[in-house]
Amino acid sequence: MISCIILAGGKGSRMEYKNKALLKKDGKFFIEIILENIKKIKQIDEILISSNSNELDYLGVNVYSDEIKNIGPMGGFFTVLPKIKNEFAIILPCDLPFLSERLIEELINELKIENWDIIVPKINGRIDYLVGIYSKNIFNSVKKLVEQKKYKIAFLEEGNKVKHIELTEEYLKYLRNINTIDNFKEFC
Image (cartoon, rainbow, N blue to C red):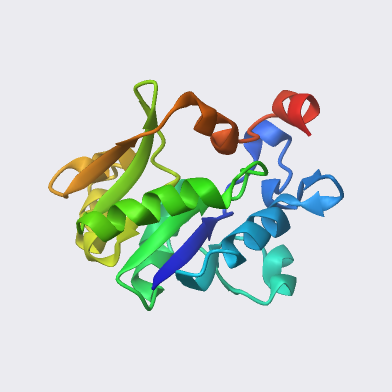
């Protein structure tokens, strides 16, 4: 079985400081769309959310506030990764309203082939580190990077067994995140 961590702790500075998890597409909050997709995947038996707001408490999922604030997604990794009950977690940002269970299953299938520390998608040479499977065992790497004030998730490649899954361009639609007001107006 595998856990799921949804990163929803951002300030939303490029979104006029709105909580991106609570933006709506087709009448549903982004976070609700993601949860619906996650709950369809049989291998996922635990969902945790990293959020610095109590606005998501209504979801009935364990929500954790960053132990170290203002370090971006690394704060969510640092706080929530040690709390998962499984060896691996799929980690997702809250701003993926087009996420498909198909993409997540592709990542999980790779885990069945061989145990990696990190499995992330790569499309047209671009790696998306915020959509991936991460082993609980990388926490020492996370802790070390936080101590060194290196907050880019890509730094986790150093010293860990990493698999970049080459995916076709059709998967780009699932990875379209909504970062700005213009993105929101265009796609939602």
